[in-house]
Length: 415
Image (cartoon, rainbow, N blue to C red):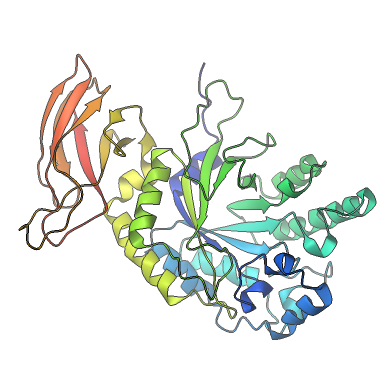
């Protein structure tokens, strides 16, 4: 059965490839992650005292957008409102629990959008559907219907007052089996933002699960995505893996288990292998600054992205079978072989390397190969190929001493 053609907005989303997720709210002042209010059962009257000390004094939206750009990220998803019910935007009278009613006294979402546009980054809005301030997961039906009206009006503000938005990223409908009136919500969004991407996170345990027909991308929360068989689908739907830099989405002051640049590189590569985007989260400080480690790690990984920008942003999955974790993407008439676990060349007394070099097979490649070369140093690589049988082998040389790209990419030109 045929695979549907992606709508332009979905094709554009897939070419963004790599994005930054930002979880920032009142919880950031406690430094114990974004679910701390629920987990420690902090009463709302006590928890909302955090509004009195929310200053956002170090929040510089353009600097954050610049960091994303320099890290190879093309879009940012900001938590405009998380499950605590506090909004970073001007709710225009819907609620007193927003940034305008804190010492910050500013519409931080407006600053975010402006900063993104100044740096050529596409702004996306995360908006919680689970809202603890309304007890939306446990309240009775009458209050739940009232809450859905509030949610609808809240999202409409975001649709109407910030210009064209790349996407809306919802989270929390997994908390209650109910009619969330998605038809009404998505119809309203499309009326104001016809080209926006709509995502509704299915959560851990339901990775890759399809949802409402208006959804444009499935989610893989904290889980490497798998390729999707879209044959016969009424609509082409993309995929996105969301993952955080450590074990918390909001900043965890006592969390030291951060991902390395190597982890980021490998996860991004695995996502693109499946044709999915990679949305990587950072948790700003209480005052809105991206911590130093995340900044350094993202920039370092961004140097790798810059080396391989064509296959990362434009590459599409192929069905060629490769060895181990290796895979091939296709972009602009060329093939790009992603090589994992490659050895470093050098004297045995100073070289520590767990990988290997030498021939690696490819199956299913029936188009004649013209040449193969490393993208980083343009070294020509030897190969053998029998197009009739679809079998090929490329003789991969090791990293020069002083080099380890984690995942090295070779460009294959075809006749």
